[in-house]
Amino acid sequence: MSENIWYPKYVGDYAAKTSHLKTIEHGAYNLLLDFYWVNKGPIREDIVQRVTKMSDKEWSESEFILKSFFDQVMINGNVYWKNKRVEEELSKKKQRSELSKKANSIRWSKSKGKGKKSDKIQQLYPDGLQMDSYS
Image 1 (tube, rainbow, N blue to C red):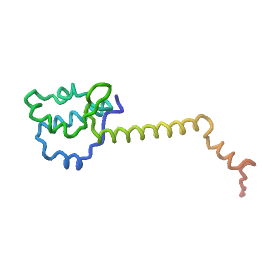
Image 2 (cartoon, one colour):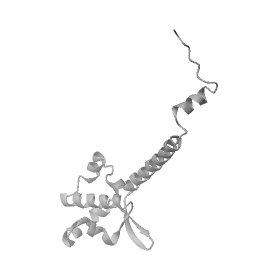
Image 3 (cartoon, rainbow, N blue to C red):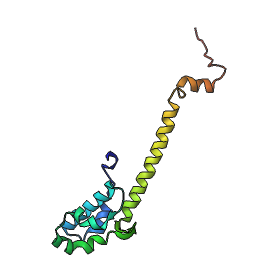
Image 4 (cartoon, helix red, strand yellow):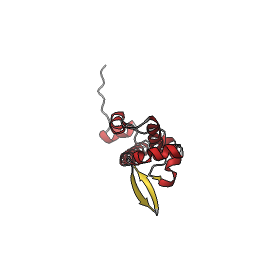
């Protein structure tokens, strides 16, 4: 869970796409984005209203607006709300994570006795390092 403690939010992009929302709709949309990020994927349609914490009346007034930020897709016989931007950010996060794992693996495999300076010097100067002596 600790790797999901933050996600990128581009305030300018968000403001440009959500300036028409009422305050309660901003809150609901942000709850949906948070839930999506933490769960690393689309939200099953039958729990969307619950995630937003909206009453039935609030939901009936705002569902069509909130729905406009998501594609409705069928996965394993269930309808899910899928957000293109969050999917892109999750993909970038996965790529960064994989690159970090590779880099750490390379770093730590070199430091297990094979990456010492003395070994590197030996590789550079196989006949030994010649030092001039000045007296």
